[in-house]
Amino acid sequence: MILQILLLILKIIGIILLVVLCLALLLLFYPIKYVGNADVKDQTATYHCKSWWLFHIIHITVDGVNAEGLAKVRLFGIPIYRKDFQEVEEPDEEVSKEQEKETPEIVEVVSKETIEESPQIVVKETVQEPAEPDSSDEEEKTSFFKKVKKIPGKIKELFEKIRELFRTVKDSYSSNKEKASEAKKKLDYTRRLLKHPRTKQAYLYVKEMVIKLLKHLRPKKVEGELLFGMEQPDQTGQILGYVSMTSAMFRIPLTKMNITPDFEKKVLDGYISIKGKFLLGIVLVYLLKVYFNRDVKWVLEKSKKIRK
Image 1 (tube, rainbow, N blue to C red):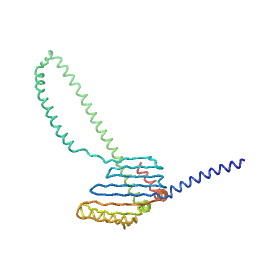
Image 2: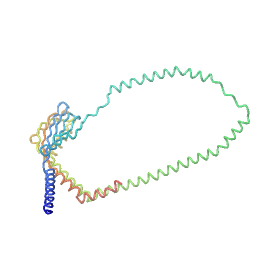
Image 3: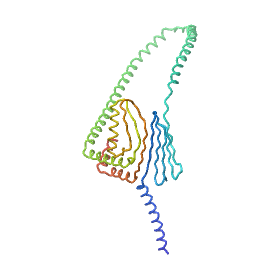
Image 4: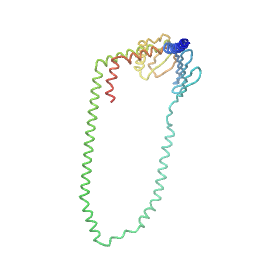
């Protein structure tokens, strides 16, 4: 009886582990697909993008026009996330000009009111009676001697303030000198770290992994027509060169993509459609390779001294 219960428990645990393993394998090695469409005409760009996983269990859509758009995430067809993208509105120039026009009128009104009220103030000042002179000369002498006695104390207080000022300047100079020396040490340490052979090896390895990752994420199908041009012909040529170089580096198929450069005027018109898929497990493998690389870990450990 006890043996049967133990076997039943082990069977249930095995089923649970098998279900978890299957879900993990699906999550890592079932392809995540994406589709994107964009249309540009008369300086207006409309786009529609969507991505899904495992028969649309998770479905993501992004629709928009220029800088305004809407993103939605659905799980089993139920909306779980929604985000609106709105274009930032600039302040209206006409309103600001009207405000500028209104301000001088306010100033003129206030100035007129002050001019009208100022004679009354002058009259009041003239009406005031003069103060009566002191009757006794002895009180004036005693007040004069009191002022003379206060002069040495004021001179001493002035010297104390000057001494405190010099002390503050000295302290600030020493603190700034220490900060400058620390900044110089960090700068020298950063230069030595960047020139170290292990840093160069880490950079080359990360660059290799990033290129492989982008190749895996690249669209497998690209279609469309595009007419573009910049204000200067050399800029148009540079962009065309970058596009051809990027497509060759990441093996992006542009056989069904018609790109026409315009070297005479600034223009952007056409449409483009892309399709692709990637595996989350492959992305995770590349990230783990970078994280556990010895040279990368060494550079991250040494760079902690710069952040302190």
